[in-house]
Length: 280
Image (cartoon, rainbow, N blue to C red; front, top):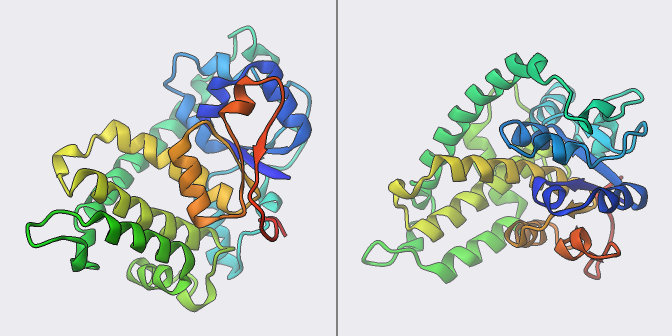
């Protein structure tokens, strides 16, 4: 079973728990978790929890690589395991002794931070005007009608045509046409997850742009990247309940390995009854 691990699960787990996770599942280590840990004081401690044996995890490039593949080849990125970084890769033993030199990645990280700033700006802009598409989500006083928004989120999770309509608004001429994309496509999940996030943000903050805490939105963006990967495989290891609920909304058949597994003596996965796996 193919799952992606997020930072919350990694932080909450012991080395022994991570080793068990890597033994019992095919664990995706995405570039997102590496970027997210870069400025964390516990970066080395977290990364040192992974087994140093070769191929203990599946190293996966960022979402942009998957979307680029789709536009170049006019086919879905799924199954995403075929996009793993090739070769026999292992975590450097120097991580355990905190002697690993991360400075070689500074140029890459600087570029990533610039891209992240623009992404945050774009997301705030969409979130604060999402009601343009659904005027009925506000009452006569301009406040959010929560049941209406919750119903919208459910519809977007199930109706591909709503996602395709939004995709048409952002599609560049070199991108694949909207009629081709479905739930197996990374770009489809990218659009779907962002629209649902913007609705949720508007619901929680009632369109108050002053509530747009950039640090919080940056954290949310990392979570959205984990969600995209999780929606294209079998599930996720996370202790974040809100993230787990989001995944269940868009992929009801997902396996979620939760806080119980991170702290308990055995891994416990919650898998609802239902068909199929995300991998092909």
